[in-house]
Length: 194
Image (cartoon, rainbow, N blue to C red):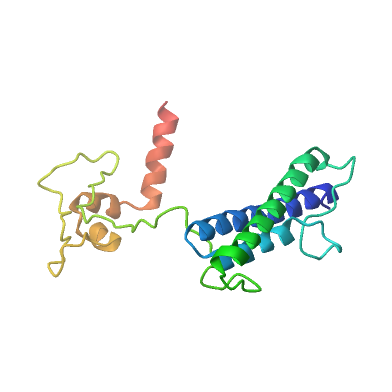
């Protein structure tokens, strides 16, 4: 079970983030000359910063005097005051100077959009010869090594498949001929002599 204070904090964070995003979107729109849409975005930020009237409504959760958000009360009040003052100023400027139509909500082409913080880097694997592996106890002889870039496959420059490499490697022939019982006898003899 989650602590209700934690859920209150998460709800607060989500709505403050949305309000701040709308606030800076409105600032950007106002600077670019889209005054009506900027006013609409700022009024949506005002709604996001209001105290909600129901648990499922829009806005901030109620900040209780002894609750976890009590230390943020003055910042929230000051931000609400700033948004209200700025909204009144912009509405006055728009009605006296710009005369832009204020839509009831931010149009979809100007709405908040998710951004990708990390650029997509395409992964590519360079085609290289596989490193030859050696079997313990068998010396590596370059002339005996049959692993190559083609691995018996002359149709492409791709490295050989695992199965092709295992079949074509002459160094593995002695190991293939020895059975598990032979290996177990050798191990038993080695452990008994020590």
